[in-house]
Amino acid sequence: MTEKKTNGHEIPENEKSQDDLAAEFAALGKKFGEAISTAWQSEERHKLQADLKEGLERFSAEVDKAVKDLRQSEVGQKVQSGVQQAADDVKSGKVSEEVRKGMVTALRALSEALDRMAGSFTPHEETPKE
Image (tube, rainbow, N blue to C red):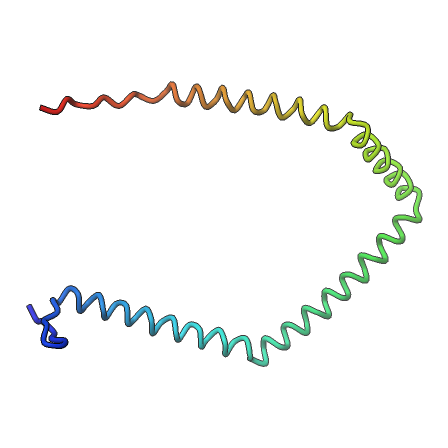
């Protein structure tokens, strides 16, 4: 087995290969960082950023227009009335009581399912030590 000497001490081959592996990961990390930096500073990234910004601004303008149009329509008025009714129900406690009951039911069902699952396992029997 080939051994490398450092400061008068011999380093076993398996430790040398670990050093080589660590060095390779370090080099890979450095190159990866440089690649990300180069990509971030590239003309393509700046163009993509500008295109995304323009696209998002257009999207936002279209959504704003659609929301304004919807609010002014009869359907929009009905939706707004429904939302107000839902908010009133939440404030009055109707919804919270229904949610609480649903959560209790779901938690009980989960507990029962866990009991069934736990009961389906075969217990581990330890062998006596002599």
